[in-house]
Image 1 (spheres, helix red, strand yellow):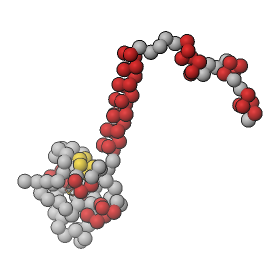
Image 2 (cartoon, helix red, strand yellow):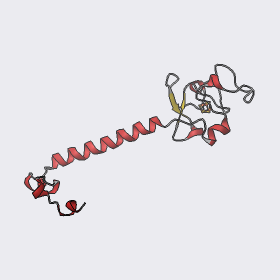
Image 3 (cartoon, rainbow, N blue to C red):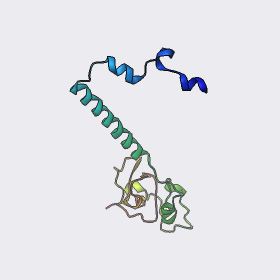
Image 4 (tube, helix red, strand yellow):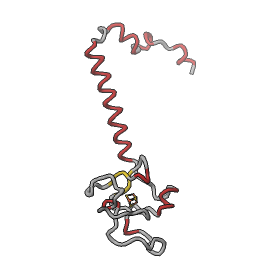
Length: 127
Ligand code: SF4
């Protein structure tokens, strides 16, 4: 523990990043621009991936209230008499993905995605 307090970058033979920077040339505007662009692109990619990954959880209170199931074949027909085979999120008028997408948005679950093969009691056949 005490050795950490007295350790210095010079005595350990390790240069701290700030020490290294002193010996480097000043970054050019182009280099700075590239670093900033890559950083922004990385954050945007991460955010996009995270948004796509957010699926509605069947246990979410909103999902429970609407009887949402990620697999329409698992809908309890006794509790959901409105359900009919073939009704899927992917052919619902509220589904925001393409009919062939595995998942897509739904205004009833803002910021999340529903499964294309899912279903809920607000199902409305796409015209
Ligand atoms: S409203 Fe339509 S798209 Fe949204 S969860 Fe219900 S069945 Fe799926």
